Amino acid sequence: MEGISEFFTSKNGEIIFITPYLQEERENLIKMYETFSVEKRCCGLPPIRRSLIESWIDELASKGYGFIAKHGERVIGHLAAVPEEEEAEFVIFIHQDYEGKWIGGEMIRVAEKFLRGRGIRKIKAMTERTNRSAINLYLWLGFEVEGSDGNYTYLAKVL
Image (cartoon, rainbow, N blue to C red; front, side):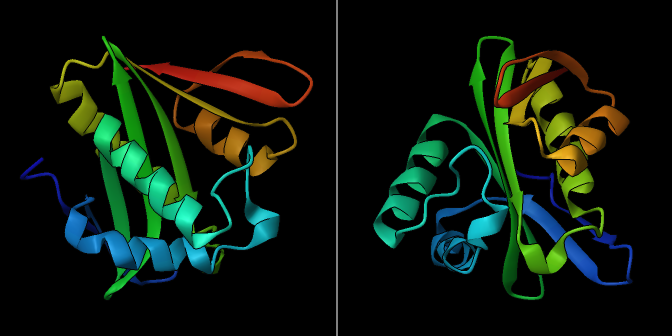
């Protein structure tokens, strides 16, 4: 996953670094999730207890590709994409201290470029039906709603 790290300036002028998730950043990523607001959880994620956070991060890393966003040394965002043939499902979380600064959109853009280079032709995401900000972001980024049920909205984008 070399050569895909990027810097960008957030909406309020902060320099943010997006880079592949490496094992060396595991503790910093765990710290992000340990301070993640319970109210901001989506679809039952991220887990709340440290042992479950560790297992979840490790499982995502073993099944696919991960990216983190950093402000200085602090991990403030995480995107994990799990491929299956020519499709990949992903999850993304931005720490509540950094919401609304376009970090999620930039992380998705970097991940799309990387996944396209790995032969992925379609990316998929799901979110709670009530998470209007996430749904609006996905739609703005070119995703289309593939369906919904009583709790969740399913979105996809052809790369």
